[in-house]
Image (cartoon, rainbow, N blue to C red):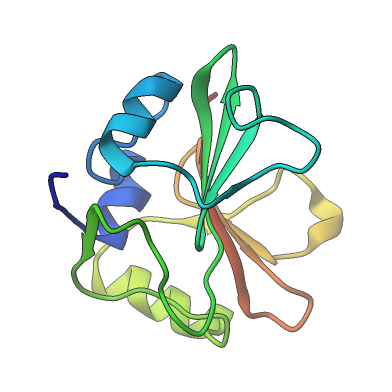
Length: 147
């Protein structure tokens, strides 16, 4: 299996993690990342709408990737095909710390105004990439999805 260098900056700006990107089919995911350790309950892996590789979740629609989600934990558990370089948040990273990272990388962002009731607990990088924070203002997820 090939090893891919990945960065959070690449994911935020381009929406891909190595070969993993919106639109590739289920077989390509299997080829590049191997078997998923788990998938959505009550489904066979072959038809499951959600595959899980540690903190990485991949959702399929019509057998193609439409959603890539990262759910930070205290340890970064990614597929063995990925070699992470640089910064990556944990489940204790605050909203303020994440904004500092974005500014240090000169990544433009703004509060996500999709749902005004959420206050500023969501940051949008663009129309397809968002960072969600818990009620306690800690990083909850980093999502890239199809338009």
